[in-house]
Image 1 (tube, rainbow, N blue to C red):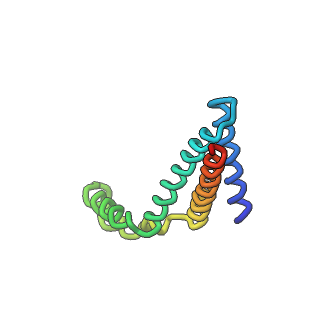
Image 2 (image 1 turned 90 degrees about the horizontal axis):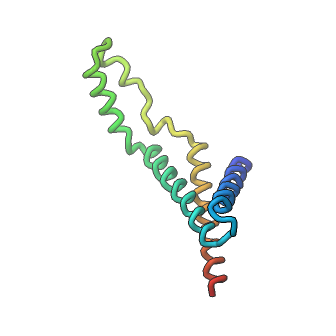
Length: 123
């Protein structure tokens, strides 16, 4: 499990460096901060979405939509299939959630280190 976390983290680092290099050939700490923040923001939104999904926040909405669609549809018995379908909270992979959470926290630490370098070098 640790191998997957570190591999994805290093892929993120390489992508960040590649994007910074493509935007400007000179490597600056400000651009590293900006691009790292964008990656951090994507992982944060994804982690928070998976957390609310895993917690069952959207189960009631999904249940209501399934029931409504079964009542409106003209195919077969309206009460047969919508009750047996799994809820969205049971379909969230624990491994995916752990990987996304680790990437979010690792990028937060990297972002903090880059802020420290920026402020120390700027003084």
